Image (cartoon, rainbow, N blue to C red; front, side, top):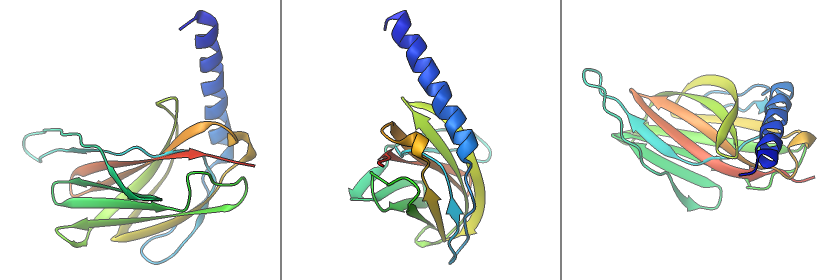
Length: 172
């Protein structure tokens, strides 16, 4: 990659990070409620687990079983992200939902959001705890239009960490 292109990508990444910091993330909700957030991102799923006595890490790719659905499993923990579209519109509601189970039963979990551009995390937002189900609503800022972003939901439950990645390109 040429030095000019590297400088341009660095500047662009910095601009995206600044945009995400300014955009903020609003609020969200627990089990059966919904709140609003503002941000930008896309998902790609990986899973890592660690045992309490002997840390071991394994990574698996999340599976996208249907449009707007990403699922990944780590041990007994299964996490699912439901999103409306890969092309959300600026300043319009973009609802997302999460379901986390352990051995088929609702599990206590936490979720935090990461926003990636060109494979690099450019911002971290929000941290919510819930049991079984969680809903949130985003409103994407105009500064995100046209950039290939990745929204990552980092789910932690029973010592397992599951990353659910969802590609997004915001439209006007």
